[in-house]
Image 1: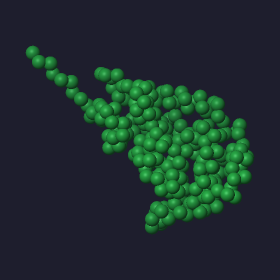
Image 2 (image 1 turned 180 degrees about the horizontal axis):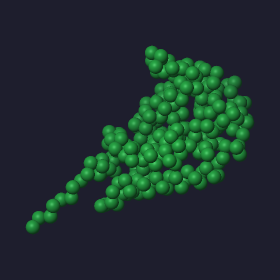
Image 3 (image 1 turned 180 degrees about the vertical axis):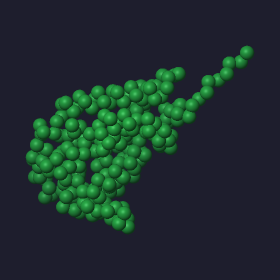
Image 4 (image 1 turned 90 degrees about the horizontal axis):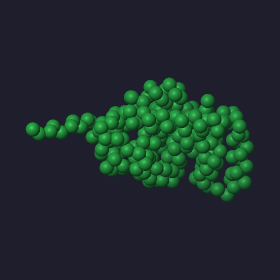
Length: 236
């Protein structure tokens, strides 16, 4: 009697494609589209509707990193979703630890950043100023890493004309996430600058206007002076 081969589900096929080639962007996109609905509700309950998209992106980012570094594998015969749920649990544990350790009210972000970069402003190009601001924000706001991924994607694409694949490699994120970060940060920029993106003939116009606008500093920080942590996942 012959033994019937086990049925391979669509999600397992995608997972096998990913683990055999971590840079298969098409498989990653399909994998994310397949599992996002399962974790959207969980993310909304954890951090609220505004930051749920960021948390889901962080979950997929962690899955990608752990698999690419071969730190974890989904055991054979076990469902992918239960395994991802455990990854999500570890993500929330880390998030709560960071939230307890890094609190916005404990740090005067504007003063710290001004001290680090203002002495150099007269000699820096606009692109270098962008780098300095984001570097300072990184040093003093580790809990804001999700927003930083979007900002870095934006700065390197617009100011340095770097391709998306280079950004993905530089910051160790799937290439298809770069486009998501760019879309989200442009939306944030349009809101901050009170620009209707539907009225813009070309998205490059929005990029150019945003970089030349007086609010550049606040935009790059992802905040306003009075609310230094308003768009980051670490805010309680």
